[in-house]
Length: 245
Image (cartoon, helix red, strand yellow):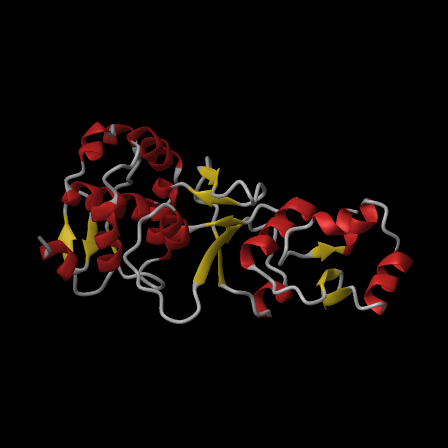
C-alpha cells in the first residue's frame, strides 16, 4: 500500500496521491475515519505521527519535485564542522529556488527543527550531495558551498568572527570545488571575504587556487562600519577579525 511506504513523520500531498490512483472520495474516507489528518489544504499526515523535519523535506521534494536543500551552517554541521552551540530547539537552514516559494504551513508548523529559509541565485553551478541514504530526495550543500552560503547571510545572520572560527576548521576543503564555485559565483563580496579568510587561515588548499581566474571586480566594498580596510581584496572587514591571530 502506497500510504504505508512513506517515512514515519512525513507528509502526503493530495496532488501526488491522486496521480497515484487515490481518488478524492478515498482520501476523504481516510480523513473521516481518522487514519489521515490534514495539516493544511492538500497536505496530510498519518494520525499520531510526530512530524519530522527531514521526512517532511523528503516528502516535499520527492512527491512534488521540489528542490529544497540543507544549507549554510546546517550543512556544515552535518559534515562535522560546528562552532555554534545550539540553544533550545535546533535550527535547520534550508535553501530553495526563487521559483519554488515556501508554503505557509512549512513556516508556521511545529516540527522537531525550526525551519529557517533563504533563497539565492548566486550559484550557477550548485554543489550538492545526498546527506543520508534514508532521504534520497534531500540534498545538502557540500562544505565548500555551505561556507559561501554562510558568508552570503553575514553579517545579519552570522557574525564574520564566528564564521572565521569555522574557516579555521576547514582544512580539508577541495581546491577544485572551491575554484569552480568561486569562478561561477556572482557575489563579489562573498568571494572576496572567502579568499581573505582562507588566506588568513593559511590553509594549504588556498595555495592551489588560481585566483587570476576568479573575477573580484574593482570597486571597494564596506562590509562593516568602523572596520579595517584590506587593500588586496578591497573590502572593509571587522577590526577584531583583521587583528585576530
